[in-house]
Image (cartoon, rainbow, N blue to C red; front, side):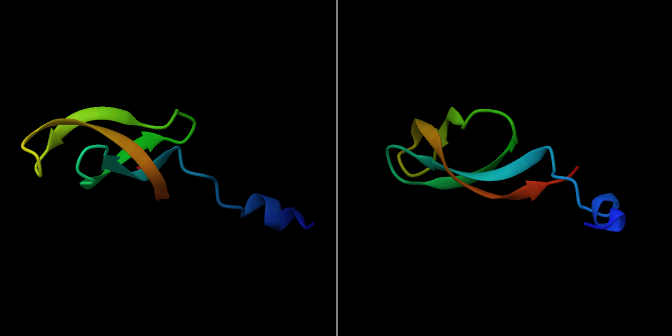
Length: 66
């Protein structure tokens, strides 16, 4: 391995964009979380059922650098 490969290697971002899905209706939205944090579970307004619902993380989309 060359020294230039080590120096030019891209660092991982601290935050990632994830897709969260409503447990009740299946409505999806995007949220940002830290890479080292646990999976997201949050209560937010669901426009399909017009009330608050639990959203759980479904999958990671990509890294985000601020």
